[in-house]
Length: 158
Image (cartoon, rainbow, N blue to C red; front, side, top):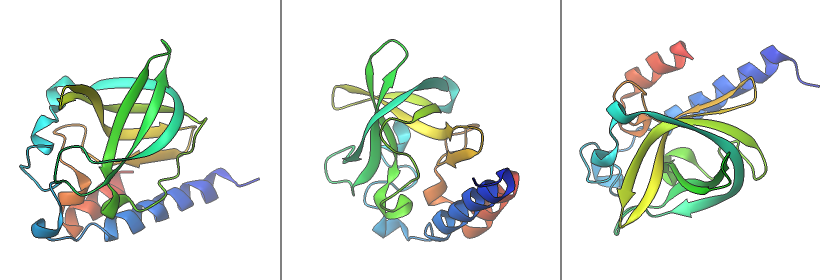
C-alpha cells in the first residue's frame, strides 16, 4: 500500500511533468490558444460542480480544425451521461490518471458547442489525494497557455 505522502508526491510530480510540457507557442496550439473561440466559451462566473462515475475516456475535437483533446463521458448522480472536456492532448499526454469506472468530482463550466451541451473541466478530484487542475477556477485561464513561471506558482498552491 502506498503511503499518503508518497501518493501526494507522485501527483505533484505528475503535475510538474504536465506543466513542463506546456511551453508551446501559440501557432502550435491548434485552436486551444488564449482568446480562441473555444476558450471564450468557458465562463468562470458560471462555475458548476458535477460528480459521478467515469463511463469512458474519449478523444475530442471540440470545434472543427482544432487539435485533438482529452475528454470523458461521466454518468452523473441522475444517471445522465455528460461529455466532459479536459484539455488538449498535446498538453495532457495519453494518460491523465483517470480510468473507466472511477468516481470523480469536477469543477468547471457548461458550454454549448455545435448544438451539444458539454462541461469544460477546470479541476478534477478523485479520492482523497488525486487532483488534476487544467484551468484556474477564479477566471478559467487554461494551464496550457500559462508561462512556466505561472505554472510553477500554481504547483506551489497545490
